[in-house]
Each structure stands twice: as C-alpha cells, then as structure tokens.
Length: 633
Image (cartoon, rainbow, N blue to C red; front, side):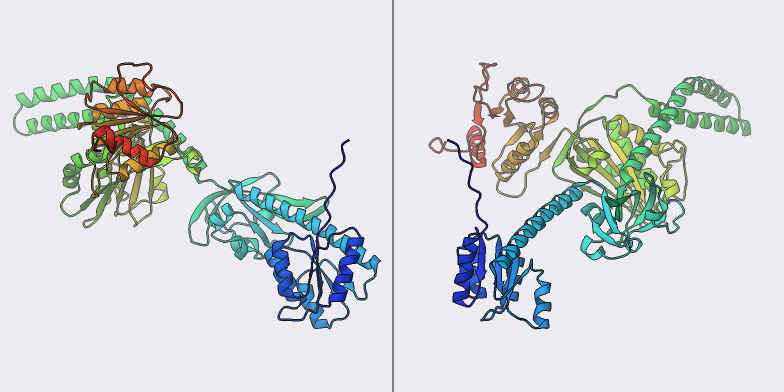
C-alpha cells in the first residue's frame, strides 16, 4: 500500500542564554509540530550551529551574554546565511529596539511566552520567510533575464529617479547600476537630439507609447553612441510604478544601412560604367589615333597642341579602364596568398610613394594568415590606400599598416555586422589631417575627391575601387576619422588558415598541416603542437588545406587531420596531398572507432582516437618524424 511521503518538519534554532527557558521553548516547539534540534546559549554557539545545520527560522533572545548580543548575532546570521529571525524579549529600551529594527526581524515574542503567541509568531514568520524567499528568487530570475537582454534597460520610479540599469545600459552610459540608483534619469542619460546636438527632452515624457526615436548618447566616459530609445510604463494592476526605457545601440544597424546604400550606389556606378565604357573607348580610340597622326605631321605650337590632345586622351583612357575595373563582374584569377608577404613585397613602392618626409611602419601580425585572393588586387588596395593617405599627410606624418588574424564567433555581437568565421584584418592608419563626418560618409563614392580630407586619388576612384575589390572578395571595409587626428581604414578579408612560425624556443624540426573542422579542438591541438616546437599550418576543411598545401613552398612533414569532416574526408585529403608531398606522414584523429584507411587500403597512416591527452598527440607526431628512439616509441 502506497503512503504519502512525510512532509519534513520546519527546523527552528533556539538562542537563549537561560538554560531552563531554552529547554522549555524547545519542548513547546516540538509539541507544536516543529523540530528544534538544538538550543544555543551564546551568539558564537548560534553561529556554529547555524553553519552546520540548515535551519528555517531562529528564535533569538535580544539580550545575550558575551561579546555578541542577540542583535549582533542576528546581523551575522542574515548576512552569512540569510536566516530569518524572530526576537524574544522581556523588555528593551528604545535604543535597543531601534537597533533591532535595522535587522528587519520577522516578528517579536514577549516574555512570558504563551503557546498561542509562540504558535502565531512562528507561523507568520515562516510564511513571510517563504514569501521573501520566492520574491528573492523571482528578482534573481528577473535580474538574470534583464542582464542577458541585448538592449540596455533602464528602470525609473514615479519620481523619475533611476532604480535599475542592466549591464548593457551600464556599458552604454558609463554608470554602474549602484552608482546611478536614486539619481534623476537625465543626469545619467545624457541625450542629444540627433543631427542638432541640442540637449534632448526626457524620453519618458517626450515619447508616445510604441514610439522609438534615435538620439546621440554621451556616456560618462565621453564616448558617443547613436542609440534608439523606446519607453513603456511599468504598472502593477492599476498602480503606476514608473517607466522602463529600452536603449538599443543603433550603430550596427546604421552601419548595415550605410553598407546597403553604398552597395546600391556602387551598383549604379558599375552599371553606368559598364554601359558607357565601350562607347567611350571607341571615341577615345579615334581621338588618340587622330592626335597621334597630327603630332607626326605638325610642328611648332600646333604639334604641342596635338600632343596635349594625345596626352588628355591617354588620361581619359586610364579613367575608363578604372571604371571597367569598378564594374568588373567576372571572377578574377585567385590563388592562396599570404597577406604579410604581399605587404613586404610592395613595401618599397609604398615608402617611395609617401616620399622622404613621411614615414612608413609595417606591423605584420602572427600567426601569418592565408586567404584566397588576386595578388594584383591586393597590391592595388595597398597602393590606393597609401595614395589616399599621402594626400592628407603633412610632412613628418606616419603611415602605419598592420595585419592580424581575426575570428568572429557566431555568438559574438559582431555577427550583427559581419558573417561569423575567420578573417585577416588589414588596418591602414595615418596621422594626417583627418576627415569630418560629412566627408567620411561619402569617401567611397566614385569621383568624390576633397584635398583637405585626403579622400580620393587624382581621379577620385581610388577608394571606390578599393571598396569594389573588397566587397567582391566577400570582405568588409570601414573607415573612421576625426578632424586633426588622422584616419583609419579597416578591411576584413575571409581567411582559409594560418601559419604559426617557429619561435626561439628549442625546436623539433618539422612542419605540421593541421586540418580540423571543430574550432575548439583545432585551437587546442594547434596550441600544443606549437608549444612542442612544430611549425603549424592550420585549416578548417579539406578544400582550404589542399590550397595551402599547393601554395606552400616548403615540405609538409606530417598531416594531422580529422577522419570525418564536411566535404572531403581526411583519407580523401591525404590521398590528394600524397603526390604534392611524397614524404609526408599521416596521423588521423577521430572520435569514431574505425579504421581510418578502410576506403584507401594503400594509404599508410596512424590513427589517434579521441579523446587523447595532448602529450600523446605530440609523442605520436614526434614518432612519425623519427624524433624518438625505437624503445621510447
């Protein structure tokens, strides 16, 4: 026969320095249906018992002998263990009662204690304690929810003072929730009307229900953000509790809109260029031929005029060729390239372009990063950006070019603006005159040239061509600048893999091509192979790995690849690479229990099953390279 489980009794700790009174309270609580397993005769003993046993309530005599009286003990119990307290008192002066109020007890029991008074005090205290516990849980859930929201949340009371900021709002405003609490909303939320930079009205009163408006938010740190704000009333039934503002950083959305507009402009320019270039070239061909004929026949001033016509036709022809590049839609020849090497190859030309009185600094990041690209296009990007910077750089200025691998995680906020994946970042920074916001908004437009801002080459197509090359390569380009503080162009180009160059630590000679489609495993294996002294080439799939292997000029000593990957498998990749690197050893890694070379019986390889310790991976690679003595293997 099934019986209902017995409901556990509430545990109550009695703290009373009078032994007889404490024992009497213990018996009476047991008789009322509660569990009173211990009586503490001092504050120190009460803390000891409470830390060892989970109590639901504490009956605390206010006047305890010893260094800790009942009030001090209650403070410790609440701060350490959040234990609710009911005070027992016979009489107390006003000062003691005021101290007791600060500990927020759940009730008082007056001596001598009647059973009815004890029962009602304990029942009410336990009920209130349960309600407060549920309220704390609800508040914790609410705080966790608001903390995980991607928008900034600001809660105000009915007087317009701030009650809460979530972490996103803290980041945008520069205030912590604790420091902002109790301050007027507009003291923390420094808002300017977009475009006019005039102080904005309080959005609580200025916004209609459901309305969202864009403002400029000036943070406590001085940083400025374009934000979109909406406001709703915070109500409980018919009672107005205040207002809640949702603040969204409009920067990513504005950037996407800017890219869309720029893309539409470039499409229009491309369509115009492709439609006109053929006819222009035909006309220029006639003009150029006629000018050359006149130059050969005339002499004196007339010959000079004919030469000027010929020169002008040649310049016009070069502009048309740039328009054709701007409108090009056929896929250019691509190959696996190392951006660091491209920068090194063109560095002498870039230094010469800047002139003697301007300096050039290259900061080529490690690990080196490979990408699919067109060598000529990458060099044209670097040259056009350098020419653009030179026009805005006074003598003594510096141009800084930096490269670095970048990985945008699928859970990163950056995926609002970029596709997740691996990129190589090219950053070109100058210390020139800089640009204002109006100029910055137009720098990629064809033929937009302003000498003061240094935007554009002599033909006004330099940055437009850079933009076209980058976007057609599946990359991203952005610019930032302030007047008097130079300009920075940042380009992200999709990467297919990296090379970790050898460092100065003792080396185990050998180059390892690591192919693994699980990002975390790839990072882990890469780290341990690098620490062991190997030069590591890294790719996330077989296609990129094959391209890197074909472009790599040196030998690849060991292929470490997962067996099962999207696209080509590890054994298929190994078979493709065998003719390129005949001496290459193969180490398959797999989470499955199978023979890695079942599909290719003639393929000589070893298999390392997941999970494996990093030391075993390094040992196996060294064994394949013959770095271990036979007995050690």
